[in-house]
Length: 479
Picture 1 (tube, helix red, strand yellow):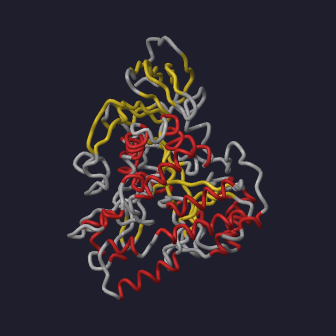
Picture 2 (tube, rainbow, N blue to C red; picture 1 turned 90 degrees about the horizontal axis):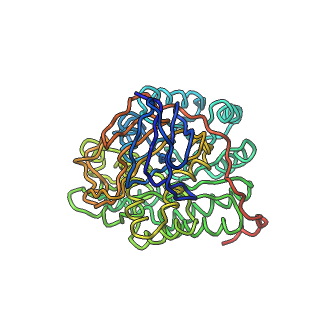
Picture 3 (spheres, rainbow, N blue to C red; picture 1 turned 180 degrees about the vertical axis):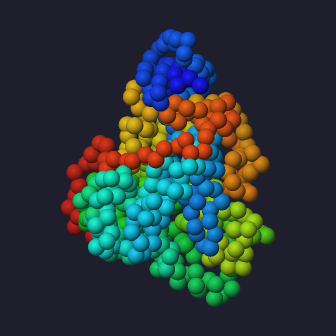
């Protein structure tokens, strides 16, 4: 197969521009962009007539082959990355869990072993921080400099499992400032949630809907504000994962307006599904149990507006798939035992195009920025990935906006027995996907190879254009 390809007749879309051009690829890189490029006999011509040509999607939030709640996610790096590719994603950044007392590097090596022979697309890792001691402090510079892991996740929820206290979060923020890393938080008040869950179960409230009712949006807003103020105090940078509600958006927007380096991500499920999904008979609501939970419908428009006006900057999938039969039903008699997570990795770009661009909520360029470019910049992948430019990796998606389809478990490629978006009509579909110039998807058929994906070492945190000059930290102590 030729390593030279010429993509012709497409409409190129980046985070900033939309224009007609051809793209010439050689040895995995974009070598030329221009009109009327002429191939030689060794160059394969790929016709993109009627299609958008966009940079490969970057999913900054996945959980593949991850142990949780007495089981392991249904998608490993083979099935998960193949499904991601079908959806137009060419790079994932997965969460590496750690254990107290265990060297960070050992956990990282475990995640490398999970991925290296299975991933069909490129990948990187975030690293969970669950404790802060001399051993962790000693390892952090090596993890960033030598391993290329420049983002760390701190859980403010899942008490007695993943949750870290505010002191650990604050120290992590201090060290991230010193070393050039980005701190990510799962922002919910885990202490109060733990109490509410125990009270609900004591009252005999065991159905899936109580997962949502014991994790109210006010507790996400409170934790988001607390984390943002700690980041301000540390003069550090913070990325809030899976934002679901108006209360959290308000906190992020307020701190950004003051000039602090606070970033927010939301996910397709929070933009299109609401809390009523969890209040279905026959345990059907368990399919929609993840954390934070789905919110009532009015929160959706707040999230869309936040994406449009830049208060939220990225779209992750938070893909964490568990089968309805054999995994989700571990909590049939106790909602707190339902494995948290849902299958989303395959439909991220298409849902954002169909529900966002086609309905006038975001622009084409914002779509690319939200699903690829901004994550690339925040997580140290730019300009190698996340844009279409001479010299960058040829991670390219040919996206046909004319294709209509209906999302269904019967046709998806994730290794899970249900779809969170079953029956949702979608406009637009990736038809061909290249990772470093090689086909992963060709004419909507899998053409990749398990293990062909490469681990990508990431640069230190770089937010791109600076935010406005910060106000003094004392201005955010109240309210």
